[in-house]
Image (cartoon, rainbow, N blue to C red; front, side):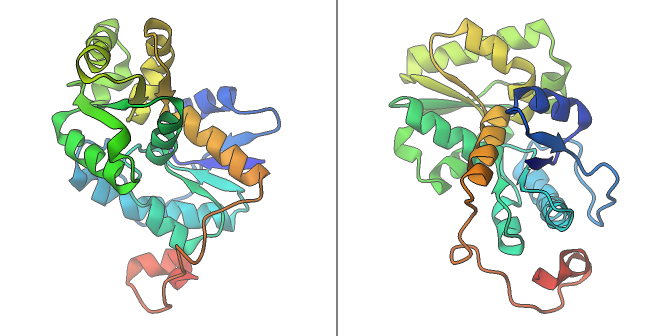
Length: 242
């Protein structure tokens, strides 16, 4: 099984270690998309910039014969649009992690990097129909670059917020709604806390494995291929929605 991961090499190696035997994760490092990619995603604006890049990468992954795509941002920008253009599964870490948490307890809390990402995360929870299961969405007050650095003082800050989710919000499960947060601190938080801690990166890879192994993908009734018509530079890469 070949999964395409839309992220960097370090994180690809991390996910490869978590994947099942016989599953390989690869990136499209040699592909030059026509759309630029923001270095970090910390706002709705950043998500809007990332979405067309994600769509183009998913189309290229299908063209190269990958079995599924795992995207790299827990806000899931571009995931649903990409599903309209491809037939292979496209997995957003946010969706995978939130649905996993919904199965593990009665009420989950979501940790998000900054206040600027709290509102988009709440909107994502509502979009996936999970508002009643969500006890809280809290900012850990750490930018993505700070989370990527993985310092101990950053972990302590995140841990303190996580504990407030349990004590003050009544959460019995936690979701780390940021790829960098999951990558750097997922294992340490799981070891330090008495509740399930959902690492959205691992959840997305395992969901991709399940869908491919079950011969399932998204419904083309729900995600129909767009009508073929000129759409500027994007349609050149995407084959006009074919």
